[in-house]
Amino acid sequence: MRSLYNNYHMSITTKTGDDGTTALFGGKRLLKSDMLIEAYGMIDEVTSFIGLAYESVDEEDKGTLSSCQQSLYLIMADLSGAKLPNGKLNKEVIIIENLITAGTQADHFHMPYMFMI
Image 1 (tube, rainbow, N blue to C red):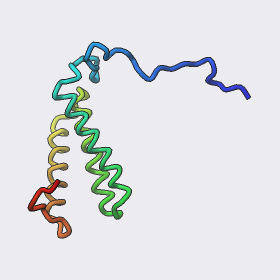
Image 2: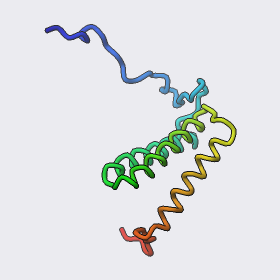
Image 3: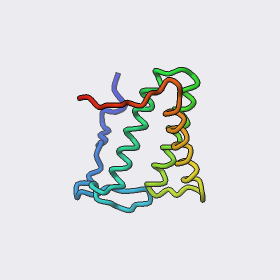
C-alpha cells in the first residue's frame, strides 16, 4: 500500500528565528534571550510538571492541579499578547497564589528546614 505522505515533506522548523528572535501572538518579535521568553519557558515547564504530578494524586488534588494548570495557560496567553478581559489576569494570579497558600498550609506538607545536595 502506498503511503499518502510519500510526496509531502513538512519541516519542523520555520527558520524565522535564525536571527535570534522569536514571534509573539500578533506578530511582534522579541530576542530569544528576552525575560518574557524566559517566563514562557518557566511557566511551560511548571505546567508540564503539573501534568506529570496529576497522574500520581487523588481525585481532589487532580481538580486543584487542573485549576492551577488552566490559570497558568491563561497567564501565558496574556504574556504573549492575547490580552485577557479586564481583571482576568489578576484573578488568575490570585487563584495561583491561593493554591500555593493552601498547599503550604496543608496538614501533610512540611516546609523543608535545610537544603542538602
